[in-house]
Image 1: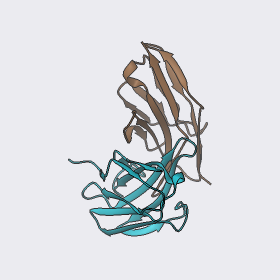
Image 2: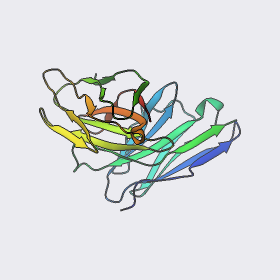
Image 3: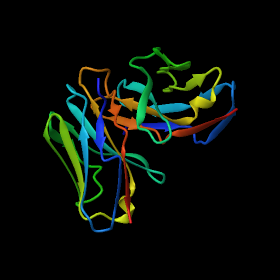
Length: 115
Length: 110
């Protein structure tokens, strides 16, 4: 089975540019989560979806961040405009309501650098 | 609200030493408990889990027991290897999402 797939693995962009991160969850999983990891703040949950519907976006830092899930096999996290403080590793994870509660499978992450 | 507290790192051990990483939680109800491991440059991987009190999760020589009376889920390994060097996260899940601890970085020297 393929795991969670994220692209790109690395992204370097200049301040003010739009950045789009992509995620393909494990087939059959109905929950999708976006996290951000930095040295200073650790692992933060940004937003999660259930059956393609956003359930909790309280972790999204500001209006520059948006996330969509147009279908069960694809999600995007967009930052527009990007700022240097957005530099972090962004993880996507998925899970199924059928698993032990909360068990999630993580992708390899996208390392974003904003200069 | 629900939270997870795990011991601050970093932890540095010699190969074959005994490892304990403490984890306690606060929660309403009875969450599932997890340990995740993150190797350098990779995403988090589930290491072990326990879904109810007194359950013991185990994997790759690591163990943790769900202790309801002390609200703890300490991670242990009897003999660590260099390849165990990683960051370890304790987490709880009561409904849809996980609550993670801040992570403990382990370095094992030969």
